[in-house]
Image 1 (cartoon, rainbow, N blue to C red):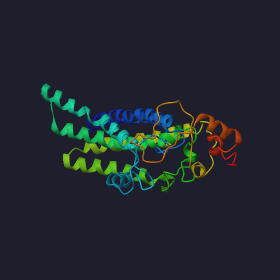
Image 2: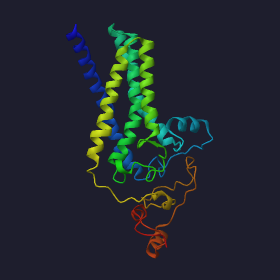
Image 3: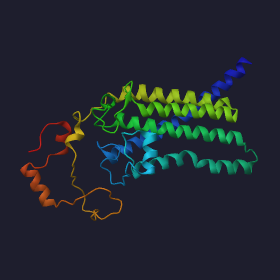
Length: 278
């Protein structure tokens, strides 16, 4: 009997290791992609995207989940939808082919869907933290309200939304285990959560401290309210219906003149605090 129990637990451990890999691998690649897109201006503050007013229903719901110090953008809504589909859409095909093969089990299918959903929730948290760990401007030591304007509420050095998110996954796993009468759901998820947390908040965090960071002063965003970026001469975007804020097109010759006379400052100098606007 003991050997049978050990065999079952070992099988659940292997499954949990696979789930951990399925969370961490996309989290790393998504974080790297977002670093390339956003630069130091996290939470899509400089991204060309629609922003929803805080009074809108969708903004109230999204900020209620992610935190009141965030702003709701189409960029994040679409990204989160893609991640959710990445985990759940495959179950349509699994259900069909399992039924065709004559081995479809509704309870097993539902249990696996629950594990996929809590994996998605954990992905949103882990990816967000890995963004900081791998970012050339931030790192774990700068994951504080002094450097991150879109994270202002922390508990034990960790954003409070992370704590709520991880607690929510455990509650969902507990309820699902009771409703579906499958204790394996809770066991698998607790092991997975432990493995993912250990790798992210300990192993990867310690390794990321070796990365050389770019200079970044505390409260850097307060002196970077207006940012102009030289870019390829694409079609003007100031009439695009997605723009919810004022946008301007600065001619190349005027930008060059402003730089020469010191009326504008290179972004790296603003971030590092090396110079002040004249």
